[in-house]
Length: 158
Image (cartoon, rainbow, N blue to C red):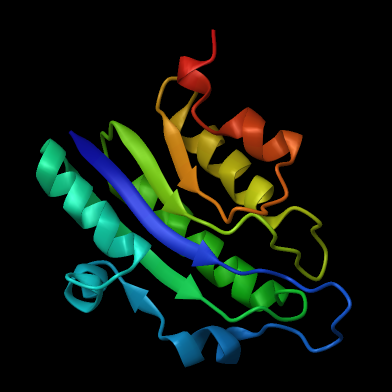
């Protein structure tokens, strides 16, 4: 089983006028493809938990991008396009897949989107179609928008 995975995580404070730019994401360390498991294996992170689950249940993870920034103002369009673009390119490049497993946050606002995660999930759903499961981890106080719900794990909603 082949599962595309990646992280694009940010908790936006819409009261802050300080944008969350690429520089803010760089402070946490941006990583791509095989850099991600090398960096996170054996750590107490969601990415490591994904690896542990893959090993336990016998599926292959296809890594795309890791980007996370500390909570701050809206995510800049440049940063949003960069990370969402790498996620989408990774899904396209993976070929035949059995699912998508993402680490998002659930409270991302950008310069021009009130539901950053919903936008990303909808774009991925368009790429993979209705039958490929999309699963995401979200923060415990995520903003569960209809767009997020509509585009995750739709295959099993009957």
